[in-house]
Length: 306
Image 1 (cartoon, rainbow, N blue to C red):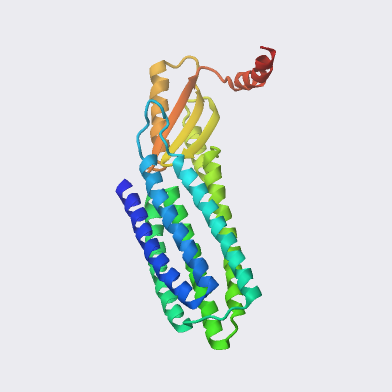
Image 2: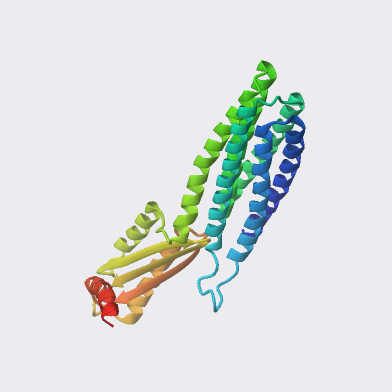
């Protein structure tokens, strides 16, 4: 699984390099701001893909004495950095497009540009298909971010092709700048969801509601426990973390309670066998949820008094 993720980042880096060369050469020759903007975006893709390879390698390192929970959050950091770079590229495209409309420069080598952008479109389409397969198999946030990024490239490449086609048949060079603005707006929109996912993981957002509901269902089906409380969930890279208090009858033996907790942990892990689970169960002889709440409320007051 880890080799598959690393291979995917190497493939995306190689493809980004090819796309940068194709678009940069054609953009300079034709004077098309849309192609140049797409070339800059592909250059950022290359930088991000290289960083993603480093992030995946670091995230998969085992926990250490210094980093007890591993370094899985670097995937979220990579996601935020990638989203930020997408926003920067969108600002550049927007600026160049407005400048193009204002100056009204003519385009050259339009026919050749159309052929090059069509080749880039087909290459990007193949890459997106490959990354989506890898993302589905690994559920890796970095690969998902890379896939989303290249999906925006796919649409922007299509828009550039359409713009070049209109300019070729109509002679209206201003269309190149207008399509550049449209591409920039779309990139802004796509970057928002990417940044949202990365920031959510950095702030330890709970797992999705469907997964939490499945965990609650498992807990409620075990009649050996009286109740449960303090359920906390979060995700960090490939690790899924859960903390839960299980309330047992005071008459049950520690061995029985321990065995029940293990069965619950096994059932939760079976919900997703492709990820790494870290489950911490607290065995309570009575429901101390209210006591926990009181301690939390008193803690700031006591700290201030001290």
